[in-house]
Image (cartoon, rainbow, N blue to C red):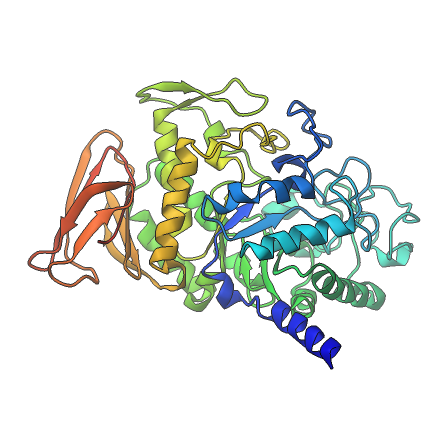
Length: 480
């Protein structure tokens, strides 16, 4: 009886990590090989190879993550990989662990340590391909027969550009052996494997790689078997194309928002671009799906925002200290990156902040955007404290579970509320912008204070309150 009760509780715990519960979470994406090491590895390494991060290193530095206000992490794929697969996407044996990161017990200890601190664990998974680039499948488990794979062909850039799913879903990405999910054995084994993985390690959610490369009917079976919140990667900004993958998967990494944030804050499109963006997203995806989208400021597949060179106005410089770079980050770029990160943390969707953002890392294209962090775990840095402050306000106001309501939009300012949290943004870096906010949820006489400056408060009077944004600053008000 006791054994039955324990098993029942375990099953309920897994099934409890629903998409609605994930809405209130904020996710810290880390690369297991790059976040922290328990073995004293040097921070100087070839970023194209293993650097020495591991599960014990994460366990030892969980406070760095939780003190920043995060209550979920997204870790690299955990499975055994072909040589050189530091990122985790080159599966060899799907039922063994990548021992460069630690043992199976080390992985279980990580999940337990996270759960003990109220942190949920999202694991990155692959069901599109295995890690070999030849046609020798003898090392692959459980898919060691040629019949388990599509015939050899390579996805072209033109296939991606034209959304040619006929080729995208049967040919190889970067030469990686492409699994044939139309094969009953392959489909059934993948569906069985994902259930085993979630149950064995007690993961709370999954990030699914290369979603567009597999037919959607398979993803429906796969995510149902997983039984936890799922967010998928479709590396595309076309909402009309992306919408077919919602439903089979709970949410998608929000590339449309990722590109729009750069258009507005980097390329100076009008702030009211966001008004049409959110209308288009609601019409394309359905308003009910928006809370489950994965909003991200940077990630491991794109050059970091701060890597872009600054042209024009440069108010001041400071030396960047990220790994393997002599890049100089300007105050303007800091301002823009703060806006993008704050928007990611406060707008509708589940925030997924890329590790190193809090230390102003500025790596370029893969692998330079996958820097080692363990020599810069600084909890006093400017950006660390900025993110921490927003996460605290998000939790205090329960903003993650609230609708997003636009409160003001014009070329200079975009503002919205999530419950009682009011967020305002501007890309006018050369002037102060002043507005009177008359459409809001606050009672007459309510005092609202800026979470970044406790003395910056305004009062609702005659149904309105003033909003001043100085030189592109972010302002987030909550009731006093």
